[in-house]
Length: 230
Image 1 (cartoon, rainbow, N blue to C red):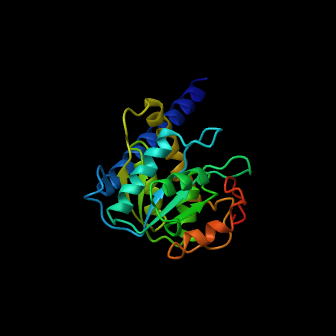
Image 2 (image 1 turned 90 degrees about the horizontal axis):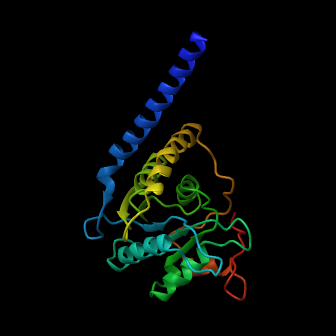
């Protein structure tokens, strides 16, 4: 029993060290690339809006709206020339990205400068596909403070010149920060294993016309997208 206890204690100790070291490394290596405001962030090709929940009515959540608003500010300040919206469109009935496209259009962003990634099922897949499908080489990630270190870390580890701008608006739930503690460990494992996302597919250069690509993905009623670019 003593040997078993020592083994369990050693395993637990290793796990604690791994968690602490991972989180400290991600935060320390990315803090220089994260900005609280639009004015000071360096220019990049594209502003990236990571996926977030939407309501069954198709209305985007406040977290998603805050990310979109931060991307709009970057575009209007001419920090970027394109906006890439990422999210989960794993079924025809669940589409996170088209509602954000409509939101951006309603705020005056030109259709040709909006690109949609229907297979951004997690942050790692979003950054991997930004690089390999959309050909992104530099990006400003518009997301909340709890998510920024991990998002920027993944992008930079994948070879993208990545910066982050804080999209916080109001109070952020503590559980979001707790969730990131464990998500950071998954990030390290994904990177070490060089995980390939479930869907890749046809290349859609970010330097092209987003409106042209969108027209291939949207049904006539302009409400549901078909993820044929997977």
